[in-house]
Length: 236
Image (cartoon, rainbow, N blue to C red; front, top):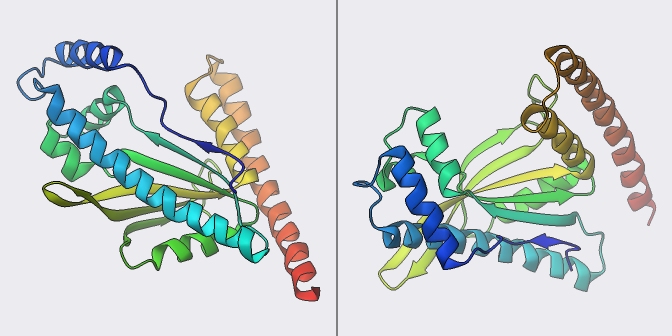
């Protein structure tokens, strides 16, 4: 089985509604989001899509265990964007703040992160998921082959999957990020530097350069470890 699976953290209905109405009042969007039920139904669909993709990945994990072959999946994490985060992204991109705008412009409301052991595992697992008949690949961004300027590496795919409700199927996007253990702990530290640290500009620039160097070194180390791993498996 997958060692860890972090599910959405549940809040009480009272907490959800209180937070919802506080936010729409602050944004002045009572007319667009006055009915919390419409938003809850939309989030339920995204949650369902996330479970659909998560179940497919868990099924692959169980098959690896049954066949007693090396498991490329180390662990997975999942999350739904908060209402405030969704509105913030719409505002940042100068998009209409409506339910329809959420559905037509945002593709990362439901997200899963798949942490793999080795570099090649990233592409293997992504390919296995992409080939499933009810899964469609909407978009691919390969930051492993083409890292971001800050050193970030990960494979991002937007999948769509049908979620069946009483009124029929809802084809819904889910963003899945595939990365290795090393890529993941590098990204966690870079995220802490970028968003959660009040360091001075001088130290920020200094640490940013250090992380770029670390990303390059980790990439080289991962390539060497991949070579050793491949050689060992060829001999078995």
